[in-house]
Image (tube, rainbow, N blue to C red):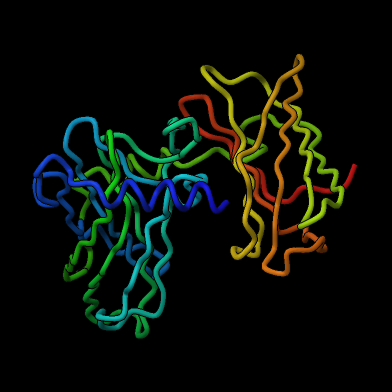
Length: 264
C-alpha cells in the first residue's frame, strides 16, 4: 500500500512534457433531462488528450478515484454518479482501472424542492496519466431545466454501466475469508462465462476506508477465482460485511457487477 502511494506521488512530481491541464483535459457539464421521478439526469463529460487516461471509482493501487464537491450547487439534495464499465491498465507493473481518452459520467441529481430550478456546480479532483501521472481539478456548472434533452451521449453512458448478476447469467458466488497478520485474505469464487480479453476482479467493501490489494484472478472452466488481501485502519483482522461487498468482473466489452458475496 505504501509502495503504491509513493510511486503515484513520485509521478505527480514530474512535469507533463510542458503541457498544461487545459491541453490535456476538457470538462463540461451536460444539462440532460428531467426524469419521471422528478430527479434530473445530467452528465460530466471528460475529454482527454490522445493516450491519456483517468480513473474509475475504485482505481487500483496506483491510481486515485475522482472526488466530487457539489457544495456550490443550488436546490440540490444529492448527486449519484452512474459509472460506465471501465477497462484495466497496467502502470509500472501495477493494475489500474479507468477510462482511456475520456468518459461521460451520468449524474442523477436529486433536488431539494422538486419542480424548482436546479443549478449544478461541481469541483472535481482526479488523476490523469499517460507515461506519467498528474493531478487535475476542474470547475463546471450548468442550469438543469425541464424537460431537457440528451445531445451528448448520456444515455449511451448509462447503457454502458456494468451488467448485474442476473443479466450476465452469473451462477453461484461465494467468498471465503481467512485472517492474516494485519487484516484478512478474501477468496471470491464466481461461476461466470469467460469474458473476452484479460479478466480481472475488483473487490469493494462497504467500508471505503478498508484498503484492498490487487486481486490475483484465475479461471478454471466456468469458474473464476480471485484472491485479495484487505487491511483496515486497525491493522488487525476484522469482521467483513459480506452483504455489503461488491465484486466487479472486468474483461468483456461490458463489466459485470455482483452485489453481496455469501460464505461458502
